[in-house]
Image (tube, rainbow, N blue to C red; front, side):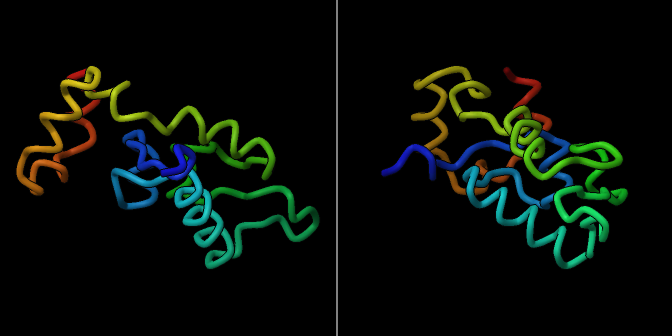
Length: 112
């Protein structure tokens, strides 16, 4: 029930990078750090600096400081009601078929 752990819609760029359209903020951060570590993207001379690869660049640019990353991430996470148009859209969405939840994130942003 913690709002911090609520699922949020990801921007098209972040969704393309992470491969999903919805995550909570902590899940998104965890997935990003997993990717960074798996692909050895930390600068060996300054581990706080992330050297972004082609997959990360649309979200973070060529390089990003680990503390700036969270600020940038905030611009790529949206509450459902910000995108879907309020509580009525959310309740309609909740009552629809599960397949409707997987609609393309670009379509969701086009509706807003």
